[in-house]
Image 1: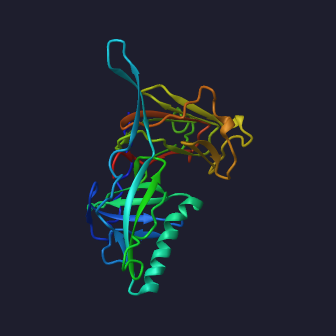
Image 2: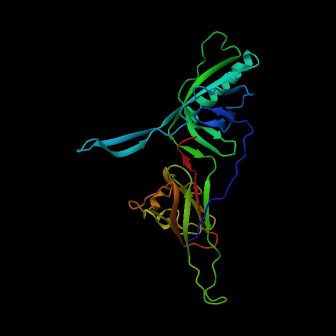
Image 3: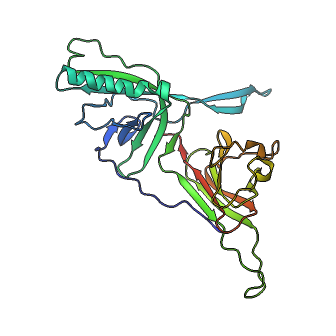
Length: 317
């Protein structure tokens, strides 16, 4: 069985010097607002930076445990449910004069509060070795000054609360697996040969994170149907292109299958979800460790391909 692993990608080492922060250690932290603008949070030479004291919410995800009484005493765990988390993030803001401070204060306030209107921002934690993790955040309050003598003139601080609907951190680098059909051959040239019209992939996917990930699949035609199977559990799903209004996937055309949220779209935005073999279809996740999977493309020719993409997820920053 061929083993396919994602390519090793070395992310850029951040220019901001690492700062020791409780619950994190030595790290460089950057906030990325919904527009993609990057705000360094640990550059002590900047006009704003994180105050290390009172940072919290960077550890393991919070959980709710559901248990049932046991007739012989005690309880038995029935269900574990991850909960959203809050991150407390103190920020110091300054300026060379009152107007410079006011501009910095207003700009940062807008960068965080716009998450309530435009979608989440990202809090990124980069380590000295170049590795980095991030978590999606929404502003949940706290952009108020100290209200003390001398504050609000050319400096002040705020203690932000950032709400995270997904409590897990994710790698900033996507892991990918690519499989592609080779050229078809003539049955009689130069001697009797068999070249199937299917791409049969037997692949071991390595999830180096702490928890399950929900992958995205991108299929490039030609193909008439696609079946994905997780071999350790037997869970599988099939997308029959001939059962959709789109019809067979032609050369160069693509279809993307998202497992969280469940969604199937063509490269031009057509909704192809009716092509899934519900109610039997299970859009399965990939657990931590090594997982054997197979995928089968009917009607495949040269150029047919499958790309699997996911971001490893972690308990802590």
